[in-house]
Image (cartoon, rainbow, N blue to C red; front, side, top):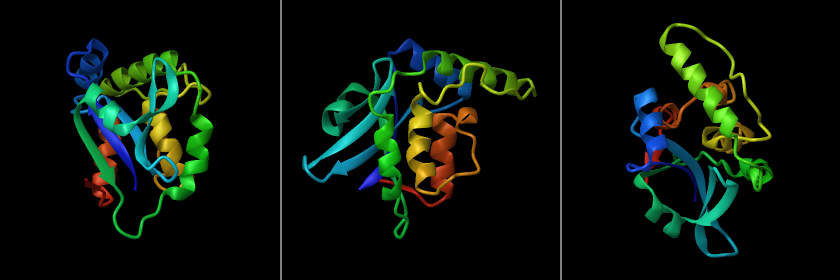
Length: 164
């Protein structure tokens, strides 16, 4: 299984700000997969510590409102795993996240700008999930820096992805 997880942290101020600013149920997204050698499910998370792997059963204890979407039958995203592995150990894009907030705020007023702090070398959570998906040939026409966890969730549901 390879999927995309979504969550929030109800008691976390940044999570509340993200959800309020984006009118979203979710403030975070992360790829998840069954590791063939470890025999366990692994989350690829991007947070202030950087991009790292964690055991999913432990990770989900630290977040709220967890939803994991899996692709419909016949859709294989495993081709994106090598690109996802390239994200591991990268530093987190704190400035990237701030710039993302500026983009979303200005979008509410009808202005469209590019993220002034965009850096794929320091990704935010949405960009890590999009790395997997776009390397697998999905949603290649979408600019991840204009996306939120909620918009990614909604796109995947429209494509037939279902919660597990």
